[in-house]
Length: 437
Image (tube, rainbow, N blue to C red; front, top):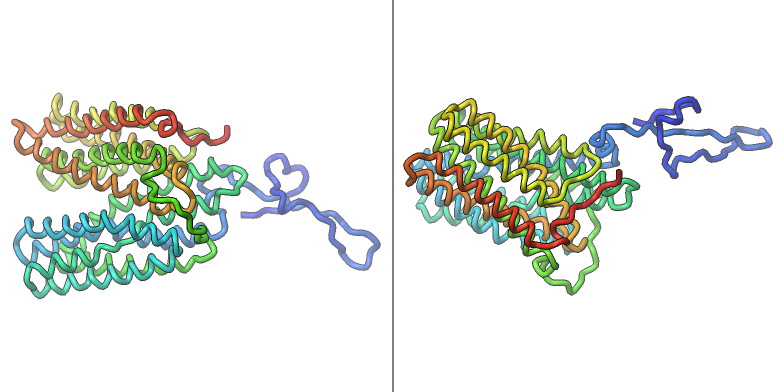
């Protein structure tokens, strides 16, 4: 990554202050000799990002831990349904774990802010993995139903891996010369990683459970999650230091934060409704690959968005989302073509990553540094609550309307609501984090 160059190549490189030429003795001669060492700066912002010392190591660990987060729910449903013959029971157990996790996650994040990532995330991960394995044993042995709920609830201590990774980027890049631009790129990468994991995780879980044995998905997810978290926590030199304890209350009291969380809630409803309505409309094996195109579009858009020099205001991102979310509705209503619907979902997905990247950037801006993990976890919790609300609303409309096509009205309406909420929050929430030209 670092290449010595001659004076003729100097215009193509930028020389950091820490590497400026300095005189040093070369032997018994009378005077020092100045030697210039220039450092090549990659043009690709992602290469510059991962040139930060320690960034690659903690990213690998975090990705290993993040993939199973999208596997546990699907694995549990398939495992319990296979053992007890009831998808209703499987869904209820999974929903109970998610509901408790939504309450526990911000509390865990507050402890992470106060005591450090490794001290809190590792014990919480070990505890969660043990109870996931207990759930596996209960399902395998067809234990009483109440034991399934108990294991799912007690194991709902999964740390917010994405939030901890974003907090590390914020810490590493806070003093960088191009800090705002680099942090924008880091947030874009994290959003793309989220989309990729939540696209691959359920598919991997389904393959493992169906091709090997029903408990295979949970077992592999538990091993990956524990391994990834241990690797992530071991990278102590990139861990944000514990901030001095303050008397500040919850980040919910920060001006602008409640309104921004309302935007995340409405945005989550877009995702939840789009997923359940597409499953109801396609109703067959092609539903999975067609739905994955939305995540693929978001992943690609997130990576491209991370390369731009300036971010767009949140209102602009949500306006684009509102417009593009109408494409699946038009494709299903006007053409009825599966290919047209797939194309519409791919384009609609491209609007989600910029909105999420900009929203997370605003969370980082509004939240005090000592409460950054808690603030981002609150945003994720609001998003998950919106997904649950959107799934319930979209599913009900798709089931009871004359045709499931009407269900696509829900994500369009939710996106429009997110846009209105963003506009109503005022200048502080709508203002984006600008990067230098």
